[in-house]
Image 1 (cartoon, rainbow, N blue to C red):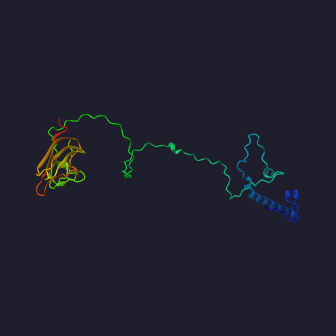
Image 2: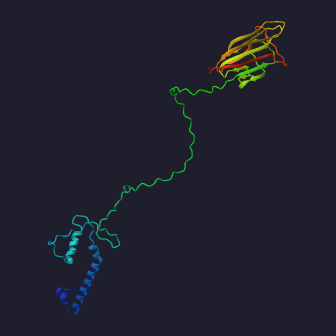
Image 3: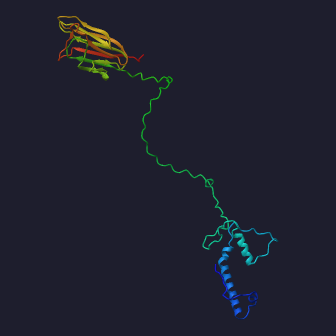
Length: 306
């Protein structure tokens, strides 16, 4: 703050200051008064804005009408402000309430909060259904699951429509052999090398057996040529069972010998011919030019026919 001093050797009395005095004393008194006024103006301009600003929250409430005190002069107001804002005896000085003009001022009014809108309640109308998208790619084929339990047996179905009575079932074969055969230590299946008739391939030329695929009653016939001075001993077999025998005793002459029979066969039954083993020396005759051994069979009646 600027300190105002009077010129040396100047003493301004009250009377001289009020009357303006004359002479040199009056002139010096007038100058001193002007200097005091200038110092007061400087102090007013320097401290006026800071002293006039009241911090937020310390503003005095307006007094009720009719109890208002008379205004104080500048000296009394300064003294009162000094008592209010100055530190009390025995207490530490509080922080200065003065602010610089460049400092941001404390807001006088409370900040009004911005209203918040709950967007979730602002639900619009349901839109139209969109177009169906393209079909995606097929996924990888998964592993096969475990087999489930066997379900319960179903109910018996209704009887089907009668079949065609004009439909006939057939089974027939006729084969031959052009090679002779002599007995040995075990039984030998008679294999045929010539095929005359083999309807639907029911006779297997490799195994020498007829396999039944059409159940019913069959007729079979076996013809052989005996060997001179040797016995002839064969069996017609059904599966592993000996059904009939074809036999001829030892003779000086060879003859044609035959055997025939009818058998009722089921599905997958086998019919074949075997030569007896070597307990007795037996054989059948044939040559490369003529066929002396034949085996034939055919279906007489199908099992489903009445």
